[in-house]
Image 1 (cartoon, each protein chain N blue to C red):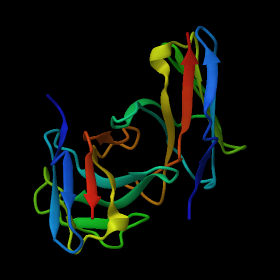
Image 2 (image 1 turned 90 degrees about the vertical axis):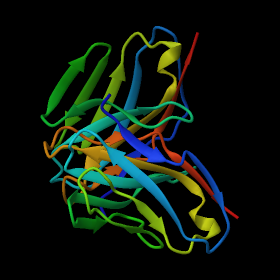
Image 3 (image 1 turned 60 degrees about the vertical axis):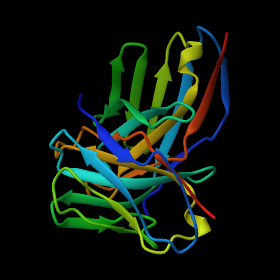
Image 4 (image 1 turned 45 degrees about the vertical axis):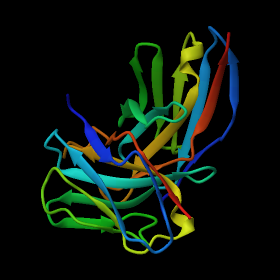
Amino acid sequence: QKEVEQNSGPLSVPEGAIASLNCTYSDRGSQSFFWYRQYSGKSPELIMFIYSNGDKEDGRFTAQLNKASQYVSLLIRDSQPSDSATYLCAVYGGSQGNLIFGKGTKLSVKP
Amino acid sequence: EAQVTQNPRYLITVTGKKLTVTCSQNMNHEYMSWYRQDPGLGLRQIYYSMNVEVTDKGDVPEGYKVSRKEKRNFPLILESPSPNQTSLYFCASSPRQENYGYTFGSGTRLTVV
């Protein structure tokens, strides 16, 4: 059973700080990794994907992948109260359709 | 507007009464999937479909049925709902390109009493 692990939080950061969200995965053969954001009562929304070792930046978001350590992270720079949400890490399981999610980390950005 | 549409948004039913939650996407995506989300357990995949007439089990398929007779539709069927199927359900779709991920519908909150 492939697994995706995340610290459930809550993670609390002050406005303007860097929020760091972490995820580990069990399948060393995993290739593609996704970060979703889910506001309370809403559906998950894709914000980043990464498949190469290293960093990928998109605006205030940076995804970091280390396949040797089976570790993927999401950094949010200049955190805003509107970033307060649950962040879900996801990895493909046995096939493309089988996208496995971690339980999510709840982020709270305090003004 | 490109979207995944699921209905109904809210449903309260009684134990044992068959129900269907509909899901439709207008993006011509090959992949479709159903997830349930429960507090403390996260998003768990029920079934997914790679194309018309091709489906596979996810992590929690027991008590559910699906069918994919048309590319755009992927209904979730509960033949005999039980209270432990009370949950928030999401339908999702994805194109065949591997790095796209799923686009989710707005969710269906099901309560079985």
